[in-house]
Length: 204
Image (cartoon, rainbow, N blue to C red):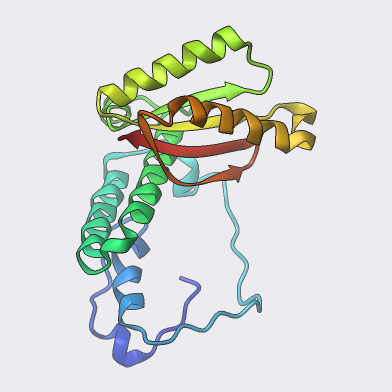
């Protein structure tokens, strides 16, 4: 949604029926067909989130079809554009974490999906005021995750007025990555999202 396509391009593909987040299945194939893409900053519609929407409810089995669709994206892009492999894997890791976050909402009754996702990707949260001893403990845990073959998302957490000192968070993250440089590969660039500064890593 939010896009206008030439009819001769979009008519090649059947729009998926009965799927949530159907753009994950549909859009990337069409964009790959395009020779030109035009972007406008004109507001064409207003997107309103409501309490009862699919993004505000606990996950159900149908939601996990999106992960299968995204795996197809990964395979498609790796096959045609191998130079983008790391970028698309990082995006898939971000999607997994969004699902993990939703599975920990109050009201989620079935944690079986959470256990499956958790085995694929680990998360380590670090506050700005962490002591040297606690930081070393967390770094050892991260090394243990990597040794087990898990990917890890490192998150620097900002609380209250700490957002006014983003440079401290960057320094802390760089310090952690320095400690891990012999055993880890950084996937993508660190990114701010809300009050978190995060980056993904994997075993060398």
